Length: 383
Image 1 (spheres, rainbow, N blue to C red):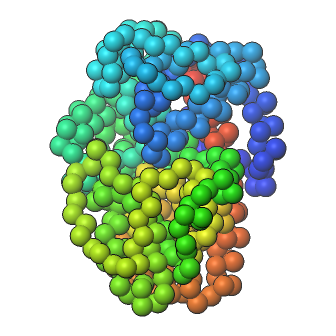
Image 2: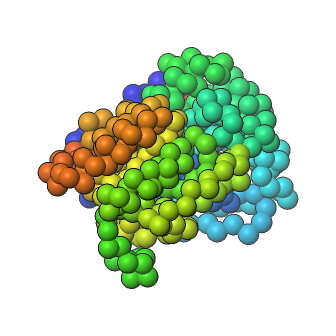
């Protein structure tokens, strides 16, 4: 089993790009990629798949290799890969395509980056991002729980390798599934993708006037995201002269959750693009991230990379991801969140310290290093 994927401190930008020239692919077996993620809305899980596959494509091109990426039926927008060949297989979509058409399309070693893969396959890697469906099942729809709680144990038993994105997730997956923790390889999310975002291209700051300090939150109604707790602080924050800026919305996999809070300082932006995210994070007093459980918490790393201070939940994977670079608070103690927000508001020095620590912390999370980790796992699977 390989070690955790990290890159040397200070290796960013051009130096990271140069690292992709290093992997030796002599022992790499022929492999294929499950491209179902390209048909799905981009959340943290799909972002992971897109960034890992983008790095693999670059590495393969630099080494004169190629691979197939299989797609379900329908009109799918595919990035302009250089070494990966998109192949549409069968007439099915969704789980039916993944379980029936995909394994019949190719016998090559299969890479699945979004939690699931075909259960009939043994020569495959499956990245399981978290155990949330076990830890907080009430956060998900009944149909989603049924699929995941059926397929995850079978995949854990049969797959050649299981990966995940944090040590916390590895422990939780081993607790719920028939697999030992030491057999799970941690290949975390990266941070480099945010440097492609450009706040100058955003029109949000022109359309909306941000005259007061604001805390930024990604708005999901999933119960484990715990955003209602922050909304409940709206009136207290209003008295401090602070707005709450919210982006995003409801995902169909999540169970319904009521949110009826209304306050003049709650500002809902709806769905925004990456450039808008860069602009909002760049202008925020902080990102607030109050989840009860997360496999990783990609917005934390994105905020830190862009110089936005973070106040995070002290549960699950968040202490591991934040290190000493964020303020922490218990997700069930709203008064602690109010106190931490007030600390940031009152101390420019603390904000500057957190920005500096955040820039250092994200160096532990590299898409390039994790992509190379997948290549190493596939080489091991050949032996």
